[in-house]
Amino acid sequence: MTGVRLCIIQRQREIIRRLCTSVEGGKNPSRETVDAMKTNFKKIIILLLLTALAGGGFYSYKIKEQVPKNLLLLYGNVDIRQVQLAFQENGRLEKLYVQEGDRVKKGDLLAEIDAVRYTANLNKARADLAAQQQVVKRMKAGSRPQEIARAGADVRAWKARFKDAGITLHRLQRLVKKQATSQQKVDDAATAYQAAKEGLEAARQALELIRIGPREEDIAAAVAKEQAVKSVVIRAEKELADTKLHAPVTGVIRDRIMEPGDMAFPNTPVLTLARTNPLWIRVYVPETDLGKIVPGMQADVSTDSYPDKIYRGWIGYISPTAEFTPKNVETAALRTRLVYQARIFVCNPADELRLGMPATVQIDLLQKKTKGPISRQNVCPDS
Image 1 (cartoon, rainbow, N blue to C red):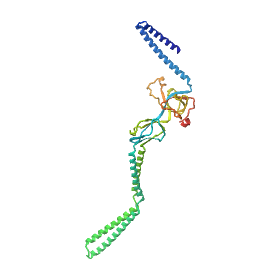
Image 2 (image 1 turned 60 degrees about the vertical axis):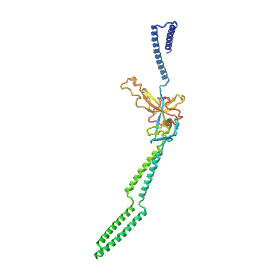
Image 3 (image 1 turned 120 degrees about the vertical axis):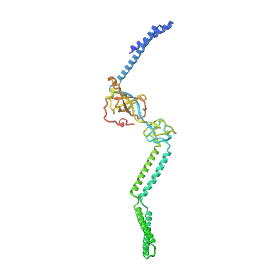
């Protein structure tokens, strides 16, 4: 490799010397000389490219020699999940309590929209529910004693009328036989007697209904309406609660998309929340190494930011398909270039790893392969 470089350097010096000699003699270089120099420059460029390729191959070979055969070395970047936070209701954004980079815990209040309309709807629904509850209570309690007493008094009054109408009718019937009264009066008395009889029967039926109370069907209908109004109240309470945006998980605020005064809609994110757990390294495994690893195998992760620190991790996911779809017809050499995405979940107790950070993963291929899913607590007891 050193001899090739010396040869190229000597050739460059010779060409420069010839060119300088021509210029110093005050002569323009001939066309043959120029063509010869162009040819020589092309040769030099080709030699330089060959040297670079040979050097890269030699460096790659040396790197592979330094990695033990029982270790699989992979390179990737730190990756996390992100949540687009939005309100479930429409409204004008009133308050934002967080900035980019703020750490929040699950349940923390992040933002609020105008809640006047939702508060009014809830108050109305609660008033309707209170009114319907009183209706149900009244129907289940039945008639009041005073109502029963009044109905009994009506029955007694009709009894008196009925008795008086009967006496009057009998008296007139005797008088009409003696031609002491007219038949019209007898007919009127008979009509009054029949009306009193019907009125007495109606009063007795009304008393019976009051004593029995409302019908079961009416009570059931009132109870059903009460349940419907309760559902309206629950919905109104949920709509009012949705005017406040809470953190669904623990994480870090990455983007503050909206500002107070903007109109918020259910399909428009207000904040972007980056989850700090789980956290993984996204790597790509060559097809030739795919059969050497399985989910659950432990791994060591290192970064350029903390070169002396090793983070514990494990293989949590291996893609069942190649990252890029190959052509229909592939040669044996091209098939070995396919890569598969894998996720190396990693412990981050000191919260040092950041999204997109380059990382190096080492997997011991001689370790005992686990069966079934691995628990995070087993690998990261301190996190």
